[in-house]
Amino acid sequence: EDTIEPSWFENVEPFINKVMNELNYSGQEVSILFCNDDFIKELNAQYRNIDCATDVLSFENDEEYSDEEGDWKCVGDIIISLDTLTENATYFAENKNEELKRLLVHGLLHLNGMDHGEEHIEKGVLPQCEMLQIQENILQKLKGGKIMNKTELVAAIAEKAGLSKVDAKKALE
Image (cartoon, rainbow, N blue to C red; front, side):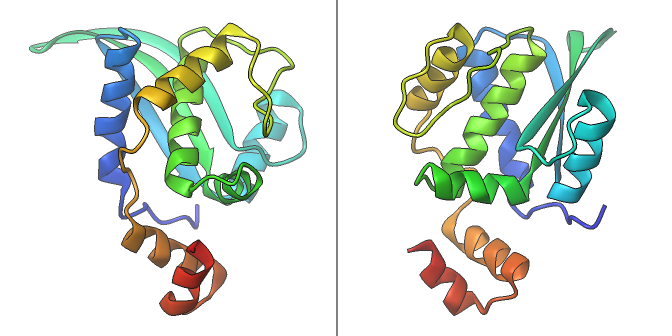
């Protein structure tokens, strides 16, 4: 509710389209919402009976429609907490851009019926289940592409942490 649409939001769609092409998911439409930990915690409690924040939630929809461009399937919604994204990036010693891509791919795989059971990505541990292996392979293929640029990251960190842009830039280094 109090999270403002990120300045880099328009860069998310081209990345999602690349992922869908890699996975041969044609004719799919997905909704993406960025939020804070308080909001995702409410959703997690309401829909999963887990009373804590998480990094990403996916809600399947599977509605279909046709228009002049063809047949479409609304696969569902991906909800990502920008607060937990930042914590994950620190834990995995990864930049926020790559962590954002991981969460987007993860959510998209869930929307297409994949599940990882009790296994989760852990620092320094290779995934064993098919979903997480596919996720990591896609991320490796698409590594280096930017959704967030450094200027946008600095501004986001400064705003979130109440820092000057100079101090936020130092925090990224």
